[in-house]
Image (cartoon, rainbow, N blue to C red):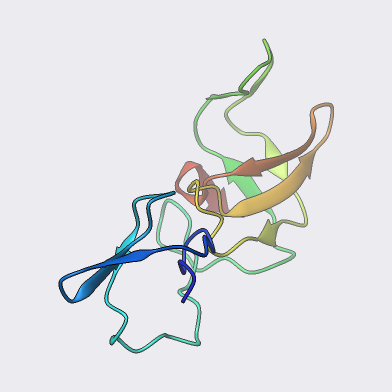
Amino acid sequence: MNCPKCNYEYPYPDGEMMICPDCQHTWDPEAKIENEKADIVDANGNILSNGDTVTVIKDLKIKGSSNSVKVGTKVKNIRLIHDSGDGHDIACKIDGLGSMNLKSEFVKKV
């Protein structure tokens, strides 16, 4: 059985739970695996879907760059990412900055 979070192939049992030595994810192998993915919501609790337009609600620094995404930046045609592992659940292209991933907690649906 591989880790459901990072797909590492050597998790180990700890009592009734399984632990991934790579990402430290702990899960119950007996629990039902949900086929339906959880809804991704914006900062106001609105459900987001692929192709939506959102607005950034906070200045966001871009890692490894001196640029930042400013408050009020409109992002069109978003794509949702489920289970990315790092908390970023929106893939998009921002004019002047290029392709990047955002966290849904920092955007609101237009």
